[in-house]
Image (cartoon, rainbow, N blue to C red; front, top):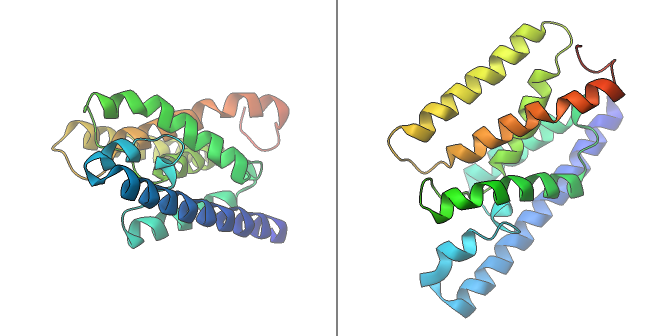
Length: 181
């Protein structure tokens, strides 16, 4: 458990640094290109997952990443793999942003949902409860996606849950002790 906490702390710390770097880069780009194009800059899939527009949003995402990385099932997700997961989610979601079918995704929430859903779907004991919790989260986000617009990019959360779920079957074969069959 001690190793899990060290890994989680280190990876969360590197993610915090990446968020800071992405924010600085975006502000520099906005100063050069102008504020009128800031939405286009925020859709940049290389940076958008690491941008946060409020301190509470940032803190909640980092806390979720820290907690999710403490679980054995997520121990292989170092900062580079978190970057790749975030990039994949942002690339899949980009057409929804461009077509204005959903809010612009800012923050690493999709990756948080990816890691959290992996945790719940991997419960060996009481697998039905873990799956139920993940499905309830997905239903809440699904409702948010189709209800009145708000500031959340619910589509990114849904993508994270779905990708977290589909990432597990390969691991069932390689680590049968971690996951229910």
